[in-house]
Amino acid sequence: MSVDASTVRRVARLSRIAVTDDEVVAMESELNAILGFVEHLGEVDVEGVEPMTSVIPMVMKKRADEVTDGAKADDIVANAPASEDHFFVVPKVVE
Image 1 (cartoon, rainbow, N blue to C red):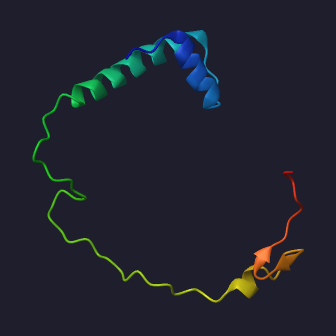
Image 2: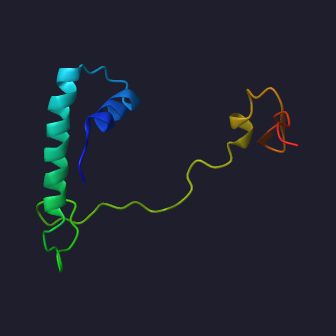
Image 3: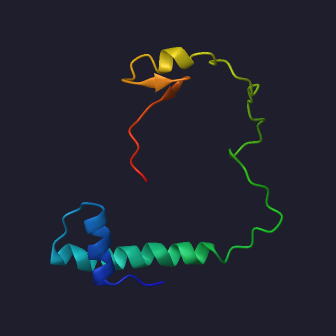
């Protein structure tokens, strides 16, 4: 994949970053270098490599999957302008 100047300008606009014409040329080469490196990583053989969360073996801490903050429906809709059966009531916007 290759990045051209128009793509750099588009990404900069979407990112709300102001770039000059000189910066566009520099960013184009930098982004192409980054994408080249990422493509190079795709060639690495990772067959049989286990996914890891740390560089040292460790057991993930897990908590019990249980509801601990239920029965607060009244508190949640307490400040709503209109509610019914623990649901927010809003005007119909779609026919």
